[in-house]
Structures are given as C-alpha cells and as structure tokens.
Length: 197
Image (tube, rainbow, N blue to C red; front, side, top):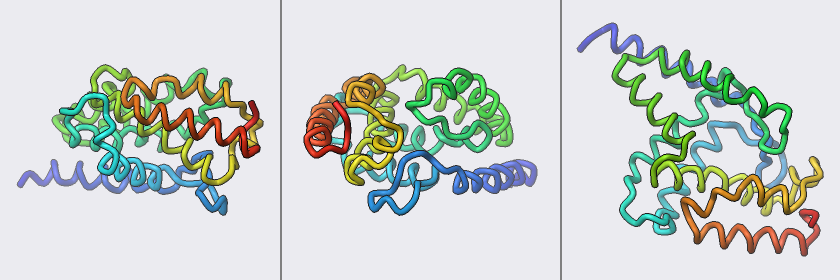
C-alpha cells in the first residue's frame, strides 16, 4: 500500500463531500425544497440501472455510464450549479468547470485523476454512446421532477415548452424512447397548466 496514494484518495473523498451542499434549481417531487447535486447524482445513477434497456445502443458499457454520472457534477463544488435556462450564467460555465475539473481531479493520484478527467471530458463532448445515454438520463431527470411537482421550477422561471425542447433536444441521441416520453410529458404539462406553450 502506498500511503501517499491513499492520502490523495482520502483528500478527494473528503473534498467531494461538498457536493452534498451544492443546491440545484430542481425541486423535489413534493416541492418542499430544491435537491442537492449529491441527491441528483444518486437519482440518475439508479435511473440508468432501471432504464438501461432504453439506450439507443444495446451494448453500451453501463459501468462507464455510471462512472460518468457519478463524477460529472463534481466540478460544481467549485463552479456552482448553472441553471440550464439562465443564459447569462452559462456564458462562462465552460471556463469555470474546466478550472474546477483541473483542481478537483488533480487531488487524485495521477492515474485516477486522468481517468476521471477523461470521463468528464467524454461526457461533456457527448462523444460516445455511453456519454450520449448519460446526458439523456441527466437531462431527463430534472424534467421528470418538474413534471411530477406540477412545474414548480418552470412556473417560477416562466419557462415555455419550446424552451424546454430547445435545451433538451439532445436526449434522443442517447435514448429515442426517453425523448418520446419527454414529448408526452411536456404536452401533458401544457394541458395541465404546469408549463406554458
């Protein structure tokens, strides 16, 4: 056992505990409060296990998808959560997140830091079937929460169906089935008054 390696891993483990404190703009289904990044990460990884049959590519590496989803939001410890519908905040999102990835993954031993960095970059670039399915699940989850809490964040921010579609249009690249379900939910949300046309 390399004590320096273990110390680096322990430092990283302690640092990522901060993900429990990063509050997202997505509200829980009961609309009692907003979810944290750690809760979001748990939810989407379980969703991958349950919904893997809906990936466009039947032979994707699910362990790789799970790793991507467990690490992709770690950068928000430094960069903060960028609300998808806030275009002003999104202007420097990429720069903030790259700087955060460098620092946070740099805490790890070099081999693990490189692995996490490459997985994070692959996820961001949507360059593989695994990354596309991971992004589809990550994008679908807050939309599902919004539908189930009767459009809490949509109503607060006066979001329209066309805005949601515009920002979620990459979902079919990872899962055509989830995209079809997304469109059904959005149409129902408009009909029920949770989302404006």
